[in-house]
Length: 468
Image 1: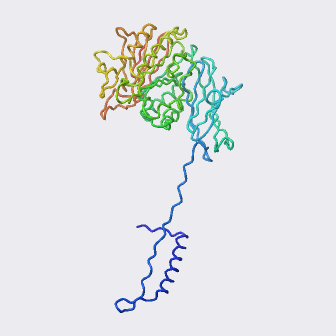
Image 2 (image 1 turned 180 degrees about the vertical axis):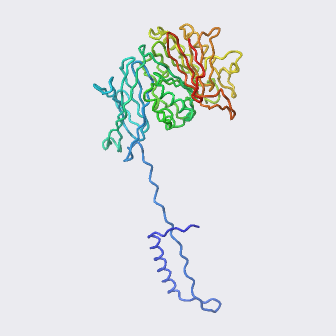
Image 3 (image 1 turned 120 degrees about the vertical axis):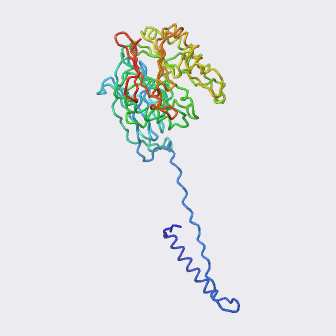
């Protein structure tokens, strides 16, 4: 048994025990055992248990940083649009935040925007969100975040602020018909950082005008910290790309999983409500925007099993959601600025098509089968394709299957379908598989043609290029 250092209290206890024991022995003298006189036995010394000091209660983060330095993350551009831009960033403690922006790098006549909307500006212990509105289409802006910690917030009358932390200056360009740039699509990152860094490095070096994060960014989200890490503070060297590459998010099936995920709006800004009519108030992830000659449309295929599947415990309500989106899509594609686009590109997570002779074809997401899930969505195809055909959509960009493929147009479907790769690095179920590699899919208009390029960022090669 290891020795225990004797502190002053124990020393005092030992001295006191020695005195008490000596007095007892003197009073008792000797005892007689079997007719013999013997010394009385020394009294047994019983140590009083030392009671440990009660553990300190954990600091309540909503009562302020209490002297702990505030860490401020790199901003992330979200919900890109022609006249608005969302900006979110992580914080390590209770703080408020604003964004200062201008149409010049000197910040002449700059505008400062608080987090939230009207009324009380929200404060938070992990993420700050600011939405810039009233911007000009296809215009470059410079911006910086200003974050101020609450060092003490025991109550509103005693609250104290720390020193503001002014972030680095970044820039972005709004979407619009005059923004003749490139889109890039990533999908199925699943919080796997090695393959995510490969894509982030590509995006940082190439800087497209718009990033489509096409679903399954998460795997299962049980807490806010996980969402903050994935969307705002990924632990990779090239994550700073998100401060200058505007992103529009398209939900995947895994982005609906986890006990916390219904509160994702606290980390990831949904689309601006004014982008849609009141009939579609709940379609907060659908969007239709112009990027030069391209109309960029975002749709949500939802979960990969029917609503009646026992795994959803009665929580799923995706079938009415897909029907509502069909009506929204018809209106969105009829908007003058969208209808006039030479190229219409639709993004969704689960593919909308599999050929009848393709191995994916039987797995259409319609059967309530505990062993099955949608490899492609027959329901979405049947609801959305008539609208897409009428409007002349030429390209669908999907994910979900973790394997790159290109489906050429066929009877009853005039659009190409490109399916992006996932996070696997040349492996599948522990075996080598050259078809499994992370992709960045780019699209741009050159000489009146839509050029689509699929980059294999694992082997640093082009998997395919084709034109429409």
